[in-house]
Length: 221
Length: 113
Image 1 (spheres, chains in turn green, purple):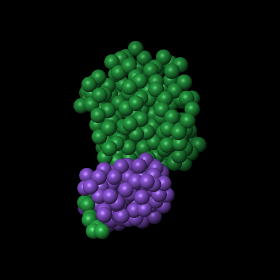
Image 2 (tube, rainbow over the protein chains, first blue to last red):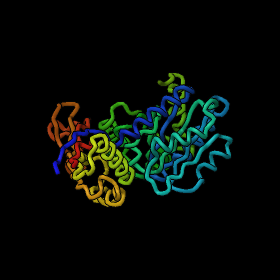
Image 3 (cartoon, rainbow over the protein chains, first blue to last red):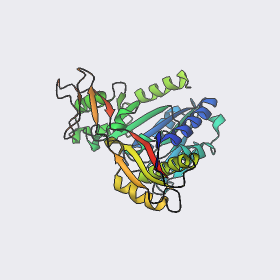
Image 4 (cartoon, rainbow over the protein chains, first blue to last red):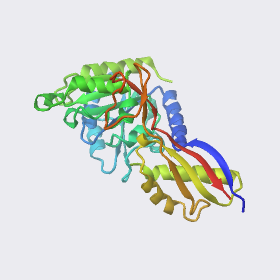
């Protein structure tokens, strides 16, 4: 039996990336800005989404895809606001992928959406590797997690457009060095915008809202 | 942490290529997985052993090439690997770096019969 070597050099994530590209085409067709929101569990993704839906009420039509390992707790909170929401339960999976996103898009009224948030599974590792078809990647770090996270999770920090530092209302009680944090993030990702915010008090959120408004106006292809 | 879906993708890529080449058996799979990809070899081996059952890839040897994290300093151009979580440039102490290696995640080649 002869052994033959076949050169392949194919990305293991290639199929996901193809699906993500077709999701993005669908979103573009409907003029939707899609934002993938990633963070550790409990950093405040759902609170950020709720604050943001409140701000845009009457100004833009929002929708949400909620990714969780299990439960519909987050989707219920969003749905109470009258916002279209689809819950994806990954049944143990540590991230959303383009296929799951595609199925969720099938269940949203795409003609009635301007801005779509995709709340990823709480995890700073795996979501960084899986494109969903989003136009922008945003990560949320809560101040209690510490200012040393960029070098512990470099692919996440290196790949996002915006880093929100949440729970700034707790800063007086923490040893969080914002200058060191900003330096570490800019070191890995000079183009990342950094917005310190408190989803509890609302402090700092206006910069986030105005960034979203600018991105929506810009239009995406 | 996402070894299950990664292993499914690996299997689907190699089975397709083997089929195209009309090969009946895959004996070895050469993978390139960077240190920053967050993949544990043992986990991939574990999932592979049951996902590949009754396929042309059953029993294939998985070979892992693991490129180290390499950074390039945006200030002075020095290329280095981070040590103990220190990502500053050892030459000029600049904090601004590009990741030039460590995020690889692909199937390099397969050996088929």
